[in-house]
Amino acid sequence: MKYVNKVGFLMLVAFTFAIASCDKTKPYETSIPSPEVHFIGAATRIIQVVDDPVPVYNLQVGTTNVSSEDRVVTYNVTSTSAVAGTNYTINTGAPSGTLSIPAGQSIATIAIQPIFAAYPIDSKDTLIFTLSEPSIKPSKFSDTVKIIIKGPSSAACDESNPNITTLIGTYQTDELVDGELNASYETSISSAVLTSPTTAKIGIDGIWDPSWETIYFNLDWSTLPGTAVVVANSAIAGSNAGDLNSAYEGMTIQIRPHSNGQNGTFSFCGPNGPELKLKTQLGVTGLGWFGFVYGLNLAN
Image (cartoon, rainbow, N blue to C red; front, side, top):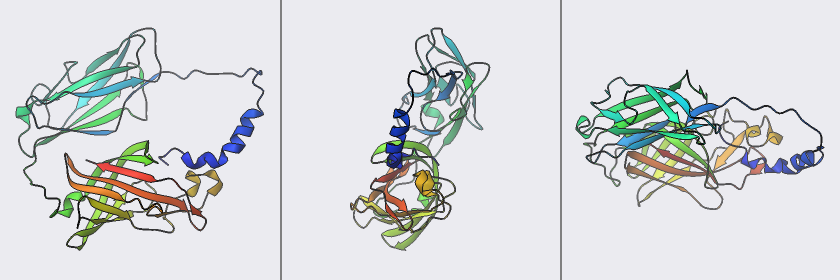
């Protein structure tokens, strides 16, 4: 399960009792994990080429600890089409090399700058940055990042008369619980079907957990901004309510529009394509609903 168990506060009393019963004067063995290096932020980023020169994009690299000595990070950049010096430049020079994290610090930056002339209308390249050894050990949770560089789009976008097939595709998704970022990962809109001239039904795969069945939302752009309302499902196949709270292990999760009346919004014409800000309410099948607003922000 991707999200942090925020609703696990129901187990807080038992957890607090367990802590209180510990003998804090008793020595315990401790171990310090080996330092690791990782990229900071989402696994996929988009640089939209609009202005000349193109603003620098700063890709941050972080370590899990701070050292009293300078440290070296090794990285590699690959692409099926982009060429360093022709399509883009980076502050460290070569497309693959090393980056220094100074003593007393835990973050360093790879500055990426696409070359404006290399990105005419409807062009696109993907750079894949990968951390490697010898250097600080790469962390498995974020050792690779895709940087998508896109030129201007030739397609005009009309919010009131959209082509809904443009919704289908992969999205970088931020998962929110009561407005707080909980996790980031990729989802995909696998279907988009018109239900009237100004409404459609879309199916999203991979939200919250890859094992969940497709979750559907109804979109309405008869008035703008458009609204997005989740389709209620009393038992989501593949879900496990134990991921929300261990007390409900083995039971399924249900979903519906939130009882507070909040619905999501969407736009066909975001800076990099369609954007959706969805809101839902989750619960345990047959038992009830959690009060939190579970949100999903999807963008290209």
